[in-house]
Length: 116
Image (cartoon, rainbow, N blue to C red):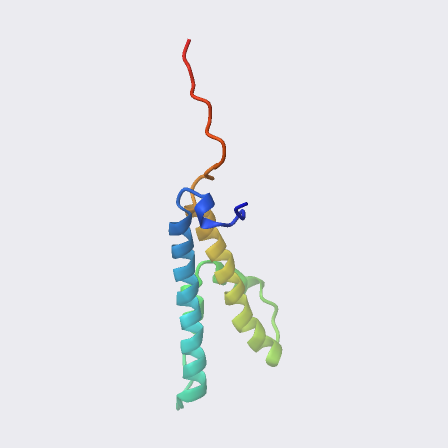
């Protein structure tokens, strides 16, 4: 039995999986770039690398900024990186739903229609 989320169950399931997966890969690579930039590179002034996370997760991350609680300290850092991650997962799910197409029903062949 095929899973409900199996790409072969939908007419364009493989395309939808490829697009959503590529989007999540882009977000993961952006996170890796920000972590590497923060940890390895010394900046004499503040770096705007972390803003790129919000750029690749727009427009939902902008809504996330508006509803993010005003926190200080370590909680603010966690919220700053968690909100775009959740937004990216929601947008990838939206891409999957938008692109997957109709369900393909496999099983017994349908009886031929006769006119008359």
